[in-house]
Structure formats: structure tokens, C-alpha cells
Length: 268
Image 1 (cartoon, rainbow, N blue to C red):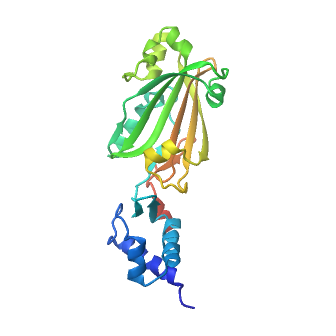
Image 2: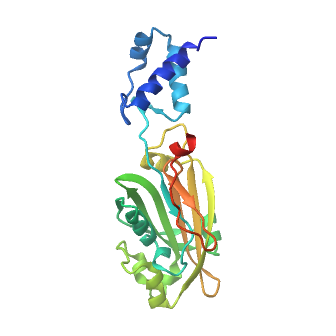
Image 3: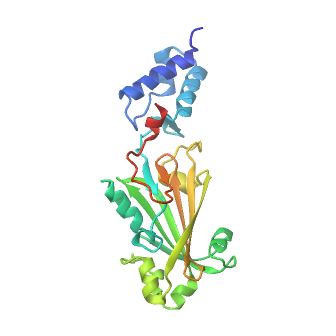
């Protein structure tokens, strides 16, 4: 049985993408141009594009057209580590881990706000909804590509007791772990990561340039940090698009990973 026409068109366009004749980010011919080139109906061309979209090879942007998806080399994060070391601070782990892989890390300027804790934040900090908290938000990039968004929440009482720099939009160079230890004698002893997967919201889809159909989901990591008395001292919420992030969890003494397999490696 011969392939349906839409599959023939999809296979031809797929070969052009995989051979490099259609480059990542390049716009495909218009629907009319494809209809004329393949002598096909509108529905046939649309079915071919839908097939390529399902494979993750192209994306349709409303009002703009259909484009070849930009290939992204996933970054692998190790979630385990020293709970009291520099990697447990707001951004130190991210910067050092990315640069160790010979890739370029950068972050946006900090956005600091005083806000009322909604249910998830209040639960993470063991406080009541509506309690004022300090949020410190940054957007992160690898090689210039948006990679993750992170917001850390602190009890307002920390600033009231003397850790006033938490309210400042300037970076705390020594790290918040050390700053809180030196200022308030609050020592970070451990943390718990709670990971969920959900669809991106509108702001995330716009920042990460995700396809509008929601096929790229988000990892959302809630990290609750505890002091020596077992009390929450920080809640950090980080969101990662699933198309460019992978995670490793290590328990016990294990060797360094020999390879970081990409999605393409696993498909082959």
C-alpha cells in the first residue's frame, strides 16, 4: 500500500530538516507554496505539518508561519550535593556547574519584591497565607538561550532581625547561606526537593520561546531549606523546560557519569 500523500510530504520535509537543507529556526514555505509545490490539497499539507509538529521537528507560530525547531543540547543538573556548601546558595551552584561544562552561564538582574505568601509558598515556609515574604527572582541563560527561572522566598522576619540585604536587588556576593549564618547565626543544614511536572504558563512560554501547543512541559522544583532546628529558612522555586534540562540524583558513593546522553542518543 502506497504512503498517503501527507506522509510523503512530511517525509520529504523531514529529510530536508535532517539533512540541513532546512536549518534550525528557518521558516518553511507557506501553506500555499507547499500546496503548489506538491500539488496537494490544503488538508493534505496541514496533515503533513501536523505530523512534523508531533515529531517535534517544526512549530507553528500564530500569525508568523511554520519554523524548524531550534535544536537544544540538554543540560544535566546534579540535584544532590553539600547542603551547607556554596552550591546550596541561590545561584552559585548553577553558575559553577555550567561553567565547569565549558558553557557560558549568565543571569538577569535580580528582581526583589515584598509580597504576600500564597498557599504553596506559605506551606513551604510553614507560615500562614498572606504573611509577608521577600522574593528574589532571576532568569538564567546558557549560551544566551533562556534555560530556567528561579525565585527564592525568605521570611520577612529575617530582614527585620538584621539581614537587611535580602531586601536589596543587589547580589549577595558571599551567598545567602553564608550571609544568614554570619548575620543571624542561622545555619543551613539540609534541603528537600519536591519535583512536579506541569504545562507552562503564558509568561514561561513567552520567556522560553516554547511552542504554543503546550507539548513542552515544565519541571517545577520546590526546594525547602532547613536550619539546624529543623525550621524552614528558605523556599526556592525553579522552573525548567523539559526540552533542555535533565537531572541526576546521586545516593552514596558513585563515580562521575562517563557520558551525558542526549535525547537524540536515546532515540537511536
